[in-house]
Image 1 (tube, rainbow, N blue to C red):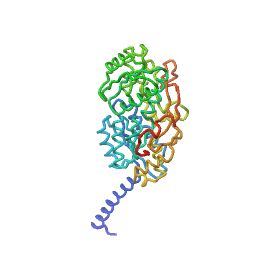
Image 2: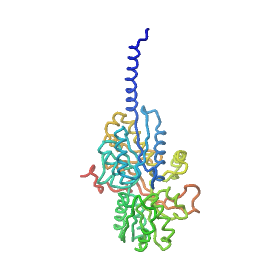
Image 3: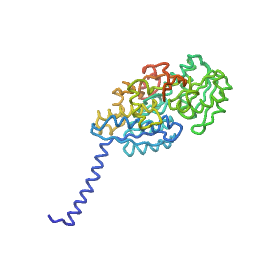
Image 4: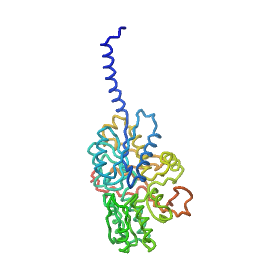
Length: 408
């Protein structure tokens, strides 16, 4: 057959037409998960690279036999709502099917609105504010691992029952701190306790909490409630020890404290602190085995309830996509999230968990006491389980949340 210029051009045109078609088919059969997190700020160890690693572990365990490929993206929202919103909007417009994690409640609430606007799925793991299943709940959002109501009820309630009936709050000045302070105050007052005052601290923007701690000490409370997290909590605990505040009989209530914070503070300073999580890496054989798989990816950082939640949430999402089929899953975030709510999540870390109509995933919470150095038996062995709150009691009752999805 004679090779003419016309036949060469025709072949080139056909190849050009086939290439975009192949790319389009590949895109249509690829599920994209965007892990939007804090890669460089005060919550980096509590979320950040380990959240990405846990998500990738879920994808690896899910496997490649379901007829579609999975791509994981990650980005740093810098704890800024405008940055987080811009990334979320771009990701959804570029075909991301799920945004996951999103610590920092002000960012989490902003992304909640973008997901609602774009009709895209959103599993929030890292933000604490219970408003995500309250007045600002959305049909495209599931709140996965914990929230301010649960923390206030477990940690705050335990402190009041132990005699801590007068409180002063040191509160991070943004949505998370405000919500945690509000919810804890409600439990303290309901138990007959008194609120002696509060002070708001810049977020982000300070590492020196000495003046705030001394102001709290001067009010002579039985408990100083730390309505903050990450590096802010660690700095407060360390500086309170330096000033000898707890030696004077005042107790610290670290209302959101992670095992990663304990690692930074040290057991000698943190011993005796009370906190609440929904996951502890050495709870049983399955959690220990999973932790060792993740630690291979992040050898200097052990997983907490946020990291475990990113794994669990990604796995439940992928199982649901496989059940629905990729075209249906991509077509509507509301339909996809409704399907996720309709089937319980189940995995080695949390067992079987129901998801309510308001998007609240229900799971047990654990009141934890930080061990002394003498009690710890090895690296990252930091907690004693003091109390377990069942899944049906740990979170705010459905009727009290004022979520528009369930109103009336």
